[in-house]
Length: 419
Image 1 (spheres, rainbow, N blue to C red):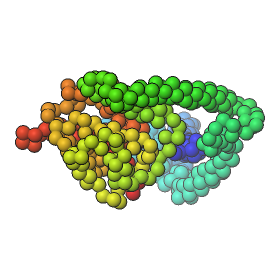
Image 2: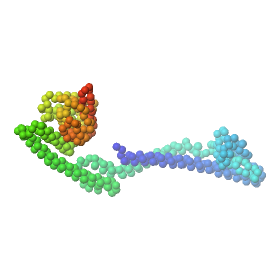
Image 3: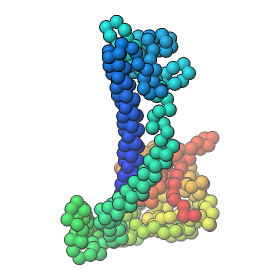
Image 4: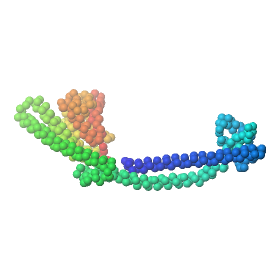
């Protein structure tokens, strides 16, 4: 995670580099412009001197500077300059064929006679001779500016972001509203940070009240629903012992009561906070315990469960929710399998439940109240399994597989490993 302070420092350094580069570029441009203006002013001044000498003495005086000379026509310079001058009559700077830069100024000595004053400026510019010295100075100036600016910005940004960092640390470390220090919001400067702290405190208070209501609701609903389900199961047990109901109705009522009991266990477990604690679980041991503890398998002695999971396989899961998930899938396989067999295997990073079925199973049975044609349930089993898998940051995938004339239904669950 990138801190706000480091981002602000990086932004300032980039801005400082851009601004310094811009100032250097402007300085270089201004230096060349001033130098050119000096050359031109010197050229104009010399032209006035020659013109005044001609008017006074009637003779053309030689330029006083050794790098200046006169020509009577443009052709005396070069053919390229003639073309350039015709295209740009007001141009002052040219380059001779030998690479020498010149400035020119055409002027009239009288009404009939015109001459051109030429000044060789190559080698005269101070800028060209000064850059080997100026560039290192510019670089030293830039580095000093960046260093001093970085130090100032570091101090400035640290003072700005310190309250935010402290607020972030407090919010990260607290586990409950009671752990907030007294006068929580008053410890922050009177700006947006204090406003943010106050908003977070109000949000935590509302969240605390909401969680308390949910906990109370979970306790109440668990008690109120478990009581009638328990009474119903006891009444059905009494009816079965005394044979007060026909066998068909008795089986249907027992299945319904067992399904309600299972759904109630899953929903209340998902709602309890302690169920959110994940631990390293040995998968093979968890599967074996579920198989041995399921009462529905006691009357299924000929049902074959093939477990292909290595003893070293460990996953990160809530032990309570994992047990409910395994129980749900195993019971569904026992009830709806086309043959009395189930294969539980770990392949790659998937826990797979594979059992034969009489016909392909709809792949949308993970949706609430959706079930297969042969199912006598209420269509909540695999939906609850999907919710448990999502709680563990896993992925649930249903597949139909055909091998010859036989159909197999596969429930594949991708679970996070611990090692």
